[in-house]
Length: 392
Image (cartoon, rainbow, N blue to C red; front, side, top):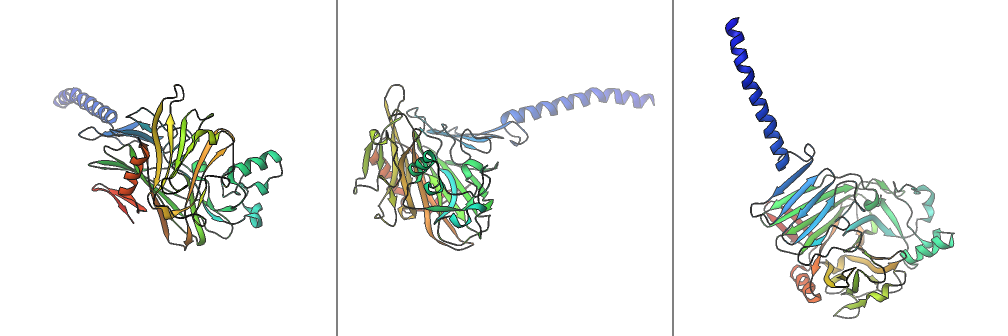
C-alpha cells in the first residue's frame, strides 16, 4: 500500500503537467483557427504565400485577397442576408467601397401575371411567406400608390411563385468555403420555403462566389433548381447592386452598355436627382430590345467628402440572352435600383437555370469590355480544390 501511495504521489505532478499541456495546446489551436468556427469564436485561414485570408465566425465569412475585401453573411446581416454585405466590398488599389446596400442581392422566384385571384391567400404582413407583389393597383392610399408606381412602374405586372424574399427573410445559412491555388470561393444554398397557391415550395437557390488571385473583381453564379413548372419563371436580383446618394454625391455617372447603340449609354448623375419609374427610361426588356453583345451596368464612384473621382463599380452578365428584364431607376429616398431578372423562359419541375456574372472595380469602360469579352457566353460557374471553371 505504501509503495502504491508513493507511485500515485509521483504521478499527480505528471498528470497536472499533461493537463496543462493539453489546455494550452487547445487554446493555441483556437487562436490559430484550427478548431471549427462553431466551437471557436473565429477561424482564420491564410495560404502559404499570404495573398489571401479567410476569417470565419458564427455570423459571417470575410474574404481578403491581394486586391479586394468582401464579407458574406451567415446570419444577422448589416442589411441584407444574400450576396456581398453592405459596405464591405473594398478596392485596395483606390480605397473605394461600393455605395449601396450590398452586391448581388436576391429576391424571389417570379413570373408575369396578376396575383389578384388569390390575393387573400398570400398576405404575409411579417414577410414570412410569398406575399403580394408591390403593385400600384393594389393601393388605395395616394402616397403608397405613388410610391409603388415609382418602384415598379405600370406596364409589366408580376407575381411571386416562391418566397420568402431571400434578402429580407432568409434564415441562417452555413456557406461552404472552397480554396484552390489561385482562388477562394464561397458557396451558399437555400430552399424557398413558401409557394403561391397551386405551386410547391422547395426550389433550391445556389450562389457561388469566386475570388481570383490578382483581380479587382469576383465571379458569381446564381442557379435555380426548380420544383415547379412555369411559362416564364425568373429570379430577381440586384446586379451589381443599388446606389445610395444625395444629388450624386457618391457617383458621377452611370454606364449601360445595352442602350443607345454599340458604345452604350453614359448617363450623368443629374438624371437621377428626381424619382422616376423603371418603365419611363433606362429600362431593358428582352421582348422589346435587341440582345446586346455585352450586358454591362456600372456606376462611376466619387468621394462623398472631396468629390474626387474613383473607379467604376460594374456588373457584367456574361451571357446577355439570360436577361429577361432590367432597369436602372431612381426611387424616392435617395436610392437607384439596378434590378435584373434572369431566365424568364419555360421551366419544368426538375429543371435548372443559371446566370454567371463578374462584379468588381474597373478603371475604364474599355477595361470592362475587355474582361467581358474574355469570359462572355457562359452561364454556369463551378469550383473545387483543383480550380474554378465557367461553362456554357
